[in-house]
Each structure stands twice: as structure tokens, then as C-alpha cells.
Amino acid sequence: MPGAATNSSVVDMRLCRQRAEGHAAVLAIGTANPANIVPQDEFADYYFGLTNSDHLTDLKDKMKRICHKSNIEKRYIHLDGKIINAHPEIINKDLPSLDARVDIVSTEVPKLAESAARKAIAEWGRPATDITHLIFTTYSGCGAPSADLKLASLLGLRSSVSRTILNLHGCSGGGRALQLAKEIAENNRDARVLVACSELTLICFSPPDESKVVGHGLFGDGAGVVIVGAGPFALGERPLFEMVAASQTTIPGTEHALGMQTKSNGIDFHLSIEVPKLIKENIHQSLLNAFQSVGNMDPNWNDIFWAVHPGGRAILDNIESKLELEPCKLDASRHVLSEYGNMSGATIAFVLDELRHRREKEQGGQPQPEWGVMLAFGPGITIEAMVLRNPVLRNLN
Ligand SMILES: CC(C)(COP(=O)(O)OP(=O)(O)OC[C@H]1O[C@@H](n2cnc3c(N)ncnc32)[C@H](O)[C@@H]1OP(=O)(O)O)[C@@H](O)C(=O)NCCC(=O)NCCSC(=O)/C=C/c1ccc(O)cc1
Image (cartoon, rainbow, N blue to C red):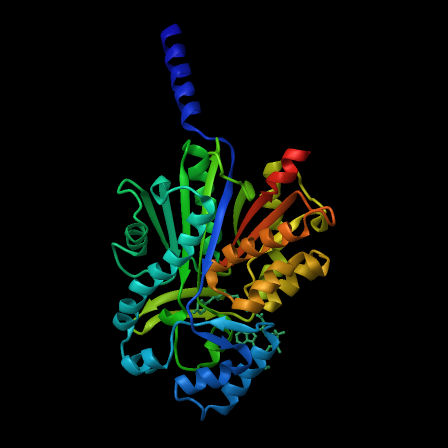
């Protein structure tokens, strides 16, 4: 029917006008950490002292071995002796402490995100009221309204900002949120998505226990904010990384290996010793899943740049050896691990920030890769992968 054809082409045109031009891009990045710094070579004394556990000498020695092998120099940790004195239930396994923890994190998690967001918004150069969507991800969210609404009011976002909160995605939270931001930005012309990821280990902190010693030895606190948008770009907006394609891969039968659960005394986590090996065995397939949609079925992995979530030194080592990467390829990830530890979902923003600073410093030197990949790993085990492109090189080629 001619009428129907006309109607459907009108709908098509309207849909076209609603969509953005081209792929979404990272437009700005901001990061923040709490003030309290713990050097890694002092962490075992700090942690066993804080929890009155110095008598557990075997476990303390194990913590020292883990810290020594972690390739971490220091971490930022909000929890200190003052908080423990005010809430001694946090270090008593037999007492409920979820309420005390939630009271603290419901204020501090959005506050830390606010510090990171203010830096990102300043770099972006537009007013905060131009943000149309907010995605907040954290493993500390236990209420509603939650950190997303608090952050929106701290920043003075418009009341029509479209908010989403992602809870308990753990170390892949930042990767998941960036994939959603890409979808939103590409499908809504002029959308500007503020992705906030803020993590405080306080919600998971517990006295020493054989099964938790690695988690406590590697995890730190931090917030990362990334502003995402697609074309047409406003005057002054500068795409940093084009977000070309994304995939999520779940490693079958690995639910037991990595997880978090809300309990009366905080968030309980489990972390299998198998995690680095499982990621090694599945990393190639997850990369192929991401790259197949850009028509490159198996690129030379040394020809691209890498933004890998540094879950732990062993994870980076395993990826490097499996894919036969030149050691410099994971430098940004190793640097972030060394300076901050594993800040769970927030870490990927720090890695992207480090990469773009390195790229700026190296401009005019060695030829830089045009294509790259971002990887994050979380409960599932889930591997979030995103194909990235350097917009400056894209325009030259
Ligand atoms: C730096 C490590 C921890 C040790 O280095 P290594 O080269 O493997 O050295 P070793 O093989 O000598 O291991 C040192 C000790 O650590 C022990 N170990 C080695 N992984 C383990 C293990 N998952 N379990 C429990 N013992 C182990 C290992 O058995 C050994 O014990 P011991 O023989 O008594 O010295 C390295 O294994 C490593 O980087 N592992 C990767 C850690 C990892 O999987 N990270 C990503 C998970 S993400 C996640 O779960 C987040 C949770 C979370 C948690 C808290 C929060 O606040 C927020 C979030």
C-alpha cells in the first residue's frame, strides 16, 4: 500500500534523525581517590594491626608474600583506625555490621564519584546540566534511591537526567557501564552520558581469613568518571577514544570462581585461585567475539593498544603470555596496578586515563596504533571487551 510505504519511510527518517552520527566516543575522564594512602610493603602490619590479628602469624606471613608478589606499590583506602573505633562491629565476624557500613558508603561513594566527575566535567568543557544520562556502577549500593541520585544532586544535573544504577558487577562494572553508555549515545542524538564508578573496600572489609587474604591484599578505593557522547560533536568537544564495537563473554561453568553476596556483616566475596588461568584460557575467544563485528577476525595483537583491567599481576602476566604481547603493551595497566591496586570497576577509567596521557606524551615519536581494545573481568566469570580506535589517527588515514 502506498500509504503504508510513506508512513514507514517517515518513521525511518524520524528514527534516523533521533540517532547520532557515527560511533560513540570517550570525551573526558576524571579520577579520584580517598586521602588515606597505605604503602604495600606496610599493608600486612596495617591490616593485621587494624583487625587486632597480629597473633595470626602464618596468615600475616602469607599476606606479606602476596603483597610482595603483587607488583603494587601503594593503595588508597578510606577505612582507618578512627572508623574502626567508631564501629568495632566491622572487625567482629559475629556481629552484624551491614547497617554501619551502608551508612558510611551511602555518603562516601557518591562523594568520591563527585570529585572524579568534577574533573571530567571540567575537561569536557560543557555545563553539568548538558549531561542527559547518568550510569552509576558500584558494589556498595544497598538502598534506593541510591548513589546515582545523590551524585546527580551533588553535581546539579537536570531533573530530567536519565539515571541507571548497576550494582555488584564487581571488577567488570566499569566495562559494562561503558558498553551501555555507547548504546545510549549512539541511539539518542545529542545524548551525553556520564558514567560514574565508585568503589570503597569498606563494604567488603573483614578480619583475616585464608579465603580473603588475596582480595584484601590487592583491592583499593577509587572513583573513575567517563563522559561519553557521539556526533555531531559540540565546539570544543574532543573525542579521546572511539568506541567501535563491544562484546560480553561469559566463561561457562565458572559461577563458583568469582562472586559477591550481601550478608549481615557486609559484602562477602569469593575469589578462586583459578581466576588467572580461566581468563587466560578464554581471553582469545572473547577478543574474537569483539573484533568479529568490525570485520577483523584475528588481528595481530601487537599492532593494537591495550586497556586491560589489572585484576592482579597474574592476570596481566597470563594475558601477555597467552597472546604473546610485547611487554610494553600492558604498561598502562601495570602502572595503574602499581599506583592504586585493583579498584574493581573503577580501575578501567584509570587505565584509559593513563593510556591517553602516555599517547599525548609519545606524540611525534614512535608511530602509534590506531586500533585498540579495552578488557574488564568480573563475576560470571564475565569478560567485557570493547574495540577502541584513536580518533586522531582515524581522521588521518
Ligand atoms: C599477586 C598474586 C595474588 C600472587 O602472586 P603469584 O605469582 O601467583 O604468587 P604465588 O603463586 O606464590 O602465590 C602467593 C600466595 O598466594 C596464594 N594465592 C594466590 N591466589 C590465591 C587466591 N585466589 N586465593 C587464595 N590464595 C591465593 C598462593 O597459594 C600462595 O600462597 P602461599 O603458597 O601460602 O604463599 C597473583 O596470584 C594474582 O595476581 N592473582 C590474581 C588475583 C585475582 O584473581 N584478581 C581478580 C579477582 S577480582 C575479585 O575477585 C574482586 C573481589 C573484591 C574483593 C574485595 C573487595 O573489597 C572488592 C572486590
